[in-house]
Length: 314
Image: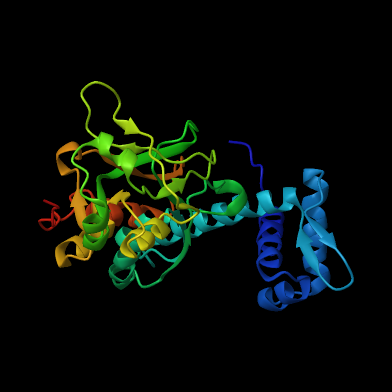
């Protein structure tokens, strides 16, 4: 195989990544025990090879260009894989290490993943975990994420999709609200109730509620005076305050149902689930920290603990 990268080029890539991480040629030079001029020459060498500018330079600071940011994310991952491969082959260190960046929806993060992270770090103490909780889709390459959890698999064939679980949906309200407005007996009764709305970040439309229906897909539009966007847990907070009915995941309100703060309604029409899927880029060699976290999460969530018997409205 013909060589494409000599030692000088690999060294230049390392210095470029160091300068990008630290935001300074001088700091990168100090960290690498070289001169700032050596760092500058290395970056210039890469820019000449690639035919693009990697940094915007001023007298006071440097910042990555768009092309530089994309190149940095790819180079950082490649260097991390090389380090992992070397540790694994030499046997000097097989323990996963480094920074792991994960994006996930707010409810799933708070109630399913974040509580597991201390156990993961106890098992792999050299891995640092950075989490991003949001319902928007992220760009792995541009934003530097290793993993994402979403409610559906994207059409992007460059991503691996592994289902974590199917989460059951429930409709809940406070006992006080149900006493005041009555208990809905059928899905059609929802039209007479305050149904708290959640706005989809991708389209701006209100998320339909979902029920078991042998005649159609079970998606039912609802209406109400309260709407929230960005954080689905806001709907749960409104429901706890007595604002109305809200459909959410059973795992979010399990404690509320068990302790009677919220009551489940329309259980006979329920039972529908929504999936949560773990996504990560295709790679012939996954970094050890990503592989360890994927295995850990599948192990913990593939067979979720059965929820406690819920409180039901009568």
